[in-house]
Length: 358
Image: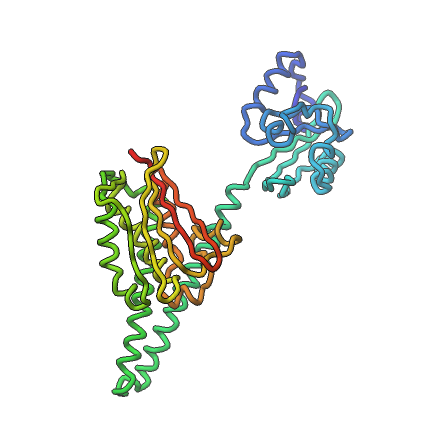
């Protein structure tokens, strides 16, 4: 088959032998995009490997099959039909697939081959691009929302002070305290955003060593003891003093501090937080368990997403940014490990950091 431009039909015809057809087939097979050639009977006359991979079950041949058998979409069928009949190009975007939805930008162009009209379609898979764009938009929206709340509070109290409240000896210090608290919240949020950005961009190095977990956990308990005491939370661990994991000391401290701090914040009053270490199947597993209310199963798959919160009001009340668990996830993967969660409503939640033993 020769793919000729209708505007050049007066030029000498190119050879139409098997070698030429094989050459053209080889050319379209090198394309990453799925390619279909459809004739005026709406049957697929040629396709490439990418098309078979995406649209053919078991990579069976697509040739001579009706387009509607392979892709059941009326808009696509109409666009191919119009391209063949009217000799016009067409562009459209479609979401295809029953189980796994994939988004394609499709360009369809007419051409003639051996006196017959055809249309060739190029399917550009933009699923990943669309997903990343959605993530970017959500991220920007979340950042704007998270920064707007404390900033609005700061501006309101500054205006109050400027309007004369600065001379109110009974309330001016309280107003300044509110301004400072919201400024600190913005500072923590921006620091977490920058930290997560560095980690995701791969600009964070890991310097592994054999870390004594019991000693590290005791230090974290000491730094968080005031928060725990305020809520009457008992902090405990039963880790062998010589128990070690292969990790970056600073990054492991960051991960455990995030998890233990969350376990204190979202625990019940007079609850407990327990940290354990197990060595199993060549892996080191550090677990942080609390006695809080637990997490509903529909939330478990999303709690490691940026800014995902079960209760936004309560998270802001206790000072969370919604980025801590995302940071833990990326740092554990940077170590070659993983983080997971188990939870039971009314009984509490357990986070597991699983790291390679060596």
